[in-house]
Image 1 (cartoon, helix red, strand yellow):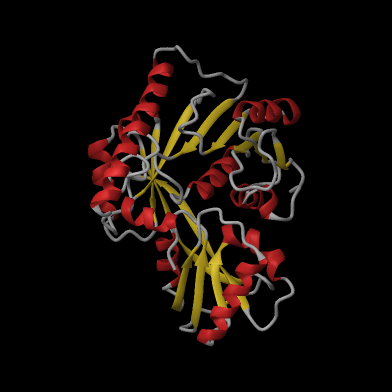
Image 2 (image 1 turned 60 degrees about the vertical axis):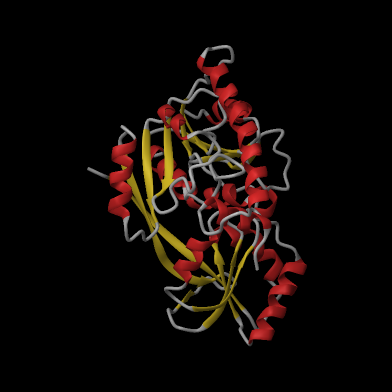
Length: 350
C-alpha cells in the first residue's frame, strides 16, 4: 500500500526511477526551488536580512533532508543533559497538530504535560514532553522567536533547543547540530521535489557539529569515512536500536516471537521501522501512511478489516504513532496494538 509521499521517497532514495516526463517536471521544479533557497540564504549572508538574537543560548538540532532522520530522541537527550545545570526549553514547530501554531502553545511546563492526546499538540512535541525531565519546558509555534521569548519570560529559560529549524534563518542560533541518517544520507543528492534535500549540501558550512544516526547500518564505518572526508566538522554518532515491544493498551512488554503481524506507521522513513520489526515478527502486511498522518476511526476500521482477512490479531507501530492512536483503540478488544520502543546512545567518533 503506497501513497504519494512513499512513491516520492522511493525516487529520492533511488529505490524507484521516475519516468522521463515526471523526471523532467521534477527537475524544473527543483531549479526554481533551488533559486528561491539560494536567494534567501544570500540575503542573510549579505545582512540584507538579519537573524534575531534572543536572550538565551539557542541550539538548533536540524537536518538537510525531509523527515525521518531521528532528531526527536537526540533533542530529548540533549535537553535532559543540559537541564541538569540550566533551565531549558524545547521549541518545536508543532507540525501536524490540531492546535493553531500561529501562537505559542505550552505543551509541557516545568511541572506537567498539558495535553494527553498527541493529535492535539503534534506527535513529536508530545513524545518530547514524555521523554524529557520534569523541569524541561516544551513549546510549539510556527513563530520560533515568539516561542523562545515566551520560554525566556515565563520560565526563565537559559538554553533553547530548537527541534528542527535549520532552514529557518529568522532566529540566530549559537550552535547548530546537523543530524544525518548514516544509511540514507542525502539520497540522490537533489533538492526538493526531485530529491529529499531542503537545503543545498554546501549549507552544511553553517553547522557546528554532525551527528550520524546509526540504525543498524552494517556499513557504518563507510558512513563515518564519508562524513570525515566530506565535512570538516566534529562528529558524533547516535546508535538507535529496538529496546522492546509493548502492548500500548496495557503497557506490558511483549515477548519476542515469530507471530504474524501487521505493521504500520506514519513516519518519514517507514522502511527502517519495518526492518526493526522484522527482528521480532513476520510481517504479513506493511502499511506506510503519510508522515504525520492524522488517524481516524475509518483508518482503524480498515486495519481491523485487513487483520480479519489475514487472520491476524496483532498490530505493531511506532511510539510517534501511538500518541495519535490510543484514544481511537481504547474500546477495541480481541486485537493487540503494540508499540516498538527504541533506545539511543550518543557518543563521540574519533
